[in-house]
Length: 337
Ligand code: EPU
Image 1 (tube, rainbow, N blue to C red):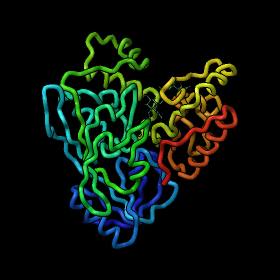
Image 2 (image 1 turned 180 degrees about the vertical axis):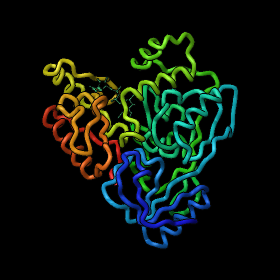
Image 3 (image 1 turned 135 degrees about the vertical axis):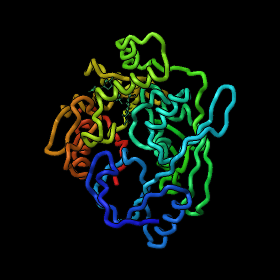
């Protein structure tokens, strides 16, 4: 085990924030992960587990051991007539896994193309896009209990998935390290093209026959047209979650703001945070090295040398303006560290 000291985390978070790790180690096996956890315990520090760093905002130097998960591997562990059950290492890049699935004709995650981050982080916040969430294809996961150092298996019900939520962000926060995820992927695809932008993109490209690749290409095209590439402009995808408000509140807002979009769900009406933020005048605003993306105001960006605290303060101002104008609280999807 090679523990490094005082390492910049700039290339390990998609926001590109330049904070440091007091100690840093990459782990390529469960044995190495256990060793790193034991070492952290001996130093009396609570380690920070890092995947692709695509859902974090670093606001300070990390005076602890940062453990970068590099557990690899994609393999079929079981199959039947309908499904292939595929186990994927937590360190596998999410989009690489999507591409492997498409190559192998494993259906179900094509709508989730180009989401930054790693497979291990995907169940944490039940990643989703274009009408599909990971819970739709999730079978189980294996996670290391940080106290007992035993591997435990969790099925979908035990993960308590919700919109950008799971038990690992709540009751079990910080208690487990996800090591691998088993996905149940269809042999015969069921295409999800109901999302407007997908339909339009497929039509525009003149696709005659639907395929996993065609959908994936459409999703990639949509994402590239709206979302900044973290390699070019630091960002963490959607910074806020879309709020669900009581339908009565939505109806009364609609009297004042005729164009307010709303999507009914079991808890009320979901309102796009992007719309709320745009109405408050933030879209495309730049403040020195940070700002609000011009094509998707739900995305906050770091143009280069931005600081995590500046982004945090901007997020607080945006939240306040949405409360002042609409009486709606919006909450970050990103974790502040
Ligand atoms: N909108 C605006 N102005 C804009 C952009 C969007 O008013 O500049 C409004 C429009 O009404 C639009 C609506 O927002 O119809 C929804 O926009 P979009 O389709 O871009 O989706 P989103 O709700 O903003 C969510 C996810 C994304 C995911 C897309 C597509 C959350 C927090 N975000 O964004 O996920 O890619 O849907 O399914 O749920 C991520 O989590 O990092 C992420 C990118």
